[in-house]
View 1 (cartoon, one colour):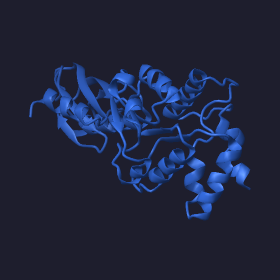
View 2: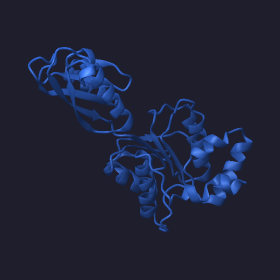
View 3: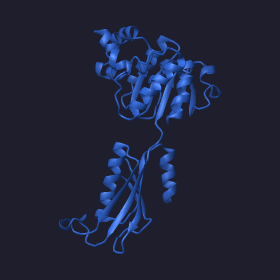
View 4: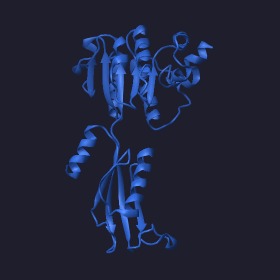
Amino acid sequence: MLFYEYLASLEAKSEPFAVVTVIHASENSPGRTAFKMCVTQDGQIVGSVGGGALEYGAKNEALEMLRTGERTRVVKYFLKDKEDGGNGMACGGEAQLLIETVMPRPHLYIFGGGHIGSALTRYASDVGFDVTVLDNRAEFSAPEAHPQAHDCVTLGSYEDVGRMSFVRQAYFVIVTHQHIGDGAVLKGLLMHGDLDARYIGLIGSSKKLGRVFNEMVGEGYSEEALRFVHAPIGVDHGGQSATEIAIAIAAELIAARNGRELADSCASKKHPLMQAQ
């Protein structure tokens, strides 16, 4: 497979990767200008920037960037012995590399295509999420109802969630039109042992959710798993309309994507497990 075809295949599978390009090389460098290699998240390499310690160093730089989410970095290697301040290669000269990471748009599953789900689809798509809307009512999961959604799914029942497959490290928002639907979705998601979700958010008042969480603990769901759930969902900004609630949820999603905790998060102030005690 040609190099760029390989990159396209990674993008199609939503796999993160880094591209390393030699942007300057002295005459003695084993990697010539414009040499390229791809580094995947699990450390596989396709292509080459010259081999040896040069390539090993570039691979480690790329893996670090993939872990932290850094987008671009320029690194310079002096190709001489380590005791002389180089990278351990004896060929002499230097090489300068550009490392660029390509991170897929994160997946967001919204359970409930009503007013809040519809508004959130628009905002989340605008800020870089690939949104899938799921509802057990065909008219609320129709593609024409959510033109900015990546995909729309009509469920036979919210009870089916526990048997469905989802992209790993995705984001999940539960805003169905029925309290019983919210509970079924949450229980279904928590049944997935390998979901590795980045975020799960559940709508509802803290008092009502407190009773739900207390019942779930009694049914055997772990407090650790339930503490991970952002509930009540969103930022406590005082707004009550569907649009305002969607904005509050979008703000929390952005924070979660960037590894931030929000002081005004509803969950940090009144998580259901606080109410259940």
